[in-house]
Image 1: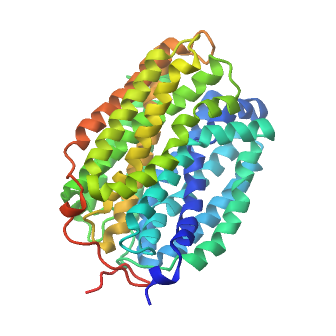
Image 2: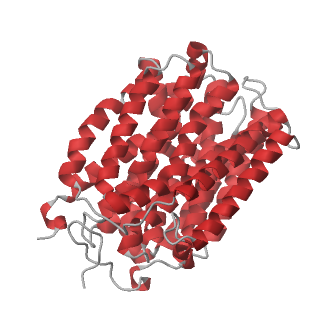
Image 3: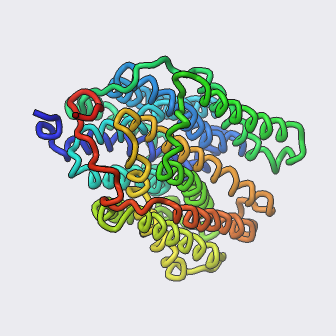
Length: 476
């Protein structure tokens, strides 16, 4: 009897999605708490930036490594290991008494998330039937996106109700409960058992770090300074060397052959730019509501709920209708709606802006984000062989996290370069061009998404393969 008949779909969804929600939530959950952390730990501006960036960068840099190790030694083993690491590092973050302790704990949290995020989708896909897969991916995508989008809301509520440490303590019981649930509900599976490309991890990880560091330091150190130029150029060279290595090594961390598939390549480009524009804008907008309009962290989170809650409803519906109408039309429509929404918010952003004037922007953004999540995940995997699901998903998650890091870094650089200050009178004039950059990036992503295959069920090359119990091998 197959796994999909023995394990209820809802149980597999819960087991795969709860750890993902924790991991994605911690992308932006700390943003609402940064002013309190500044006062409590005496953290400076640079340290506050790295409290956010340390998580995102280790998340992005280590995902493909854990995909490779999961393929070789068992995906569920590393998924559970990631949950344990994330839970322990969350406790360490809550116990931090110095800024460097919190930065280090956040980096380890990111490493745990790097094992959780890509392996969760692969384990879920291998646990549900072909018929239920679009709906399962849609719900998974909605929960994944909801975790990122709800970060400021949950962070604000927890900070006001308890303290900033509680943001991290909340992960501990969820992590403890997730481990036995995953073991009971998700079967172990394996991919190609090849040696992990450690040098590839080093080249890509240091390269990404160098590029983000250069962008973060650009305005303060000077864009023509040796510090910034070495970071940017060095990061670019290391990323180029990473691609060269991946084209030659026998067991690549990132199989470049996957990019021969048009759907995979374009969906990943769209995912990178989507994360850049959407979450870079979120970072700026949530601060606008607090700093300029004097809303509390919780109030700011509540006001953005038309944006943040929409994906939970829209994403599963998009996953259901995608086989009929096609993934391309949903992704293009979603990106266009998101660009309109964020552009609307940038155009109406002013010290005396009323919430009803800004509300259409939040609604358009929420609908757009919900339309993008599930179809883009489907577009990434639609033509992939089952043995490549983990690396394909890992690549997509990596590029999205890089997009988040670059979006926050670039839009913040635009803000500070325009003379922005974290004061009620020095924020808006610099925030407007920064948010418009995010909207422009999303409009570009919509244009690129037009080159995706239509993505209707009739366009897929045959039915998706049936999945065996403990492997991801197609049944003959």
